Length: 339
Image (cartoon, rainbow, N blue to C red):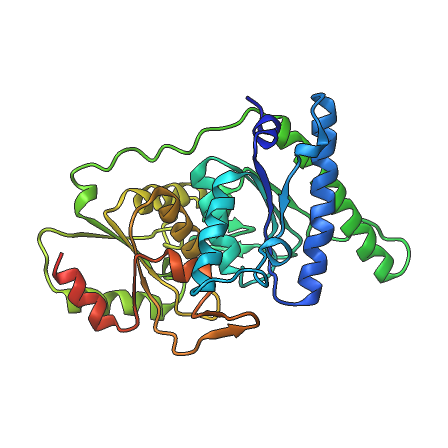
């Protein structure tokens, strides 16, 4: 079965993206138009009805204003998971140094569920890993993307600067249309096989503190392990994608982190920053799709408040996907000692 046939059978194209300000919302609207054009081209080539095409743009289609329930934020999360499970193709810009934690969660969830992921990057920089390898994205975003469209430079030298920018954006959206059609006409894929947890995996606790990019993350993990003390029955494994290992490519490091994170008995994520690290949110999305526990360390003391009774500490996808949340490191250590 092709993806376009999955789409015709109650499938969904999920247009993910930042949704907080007007410019972000306009960007998502333009992206959806390009995606729909590509989907319509794929549908026509297969002789299928375009009436079956369904897209979802979170800020517009969530129905938050009409939703009347006691815990609106949790209900929005539950409804979103239902849409992610139906998602045949997720499409999103993934620009900026700080990636949107909710979008990264959704990428991980769709990837683990077997959906296709199309990411668009227009940033001009690469990330240099500690071992000297260059990558345009967090290695886990690169590993979970089915296709990456990257356009970091202006595509024309003629006209005003604004005209050059608009021409570049038009070219990116044209590539989105073409790539959407290609992906939908490809055979549907099954979810990635991480393998059944082994006896060793049942003892494993995966520590995902942003991949140790910053010293405070490394120190925080060391402090946690000191508080836990020596536990013979537990095997703590840390993420490796930012390790300074000369022979470890970004792809190999991502494969290690994906497999270890998926199969561990418990994954512990640290989301202490304005935006949770992209790879951390991806891992939390994967674990949620697999139905495996995530213990989230989130010491944030403020809440996000918005219209229509919206309230959460972080993006609601992270808040509600965590099996347990700890605001103090001592509480997290105490619960690990009780395992």
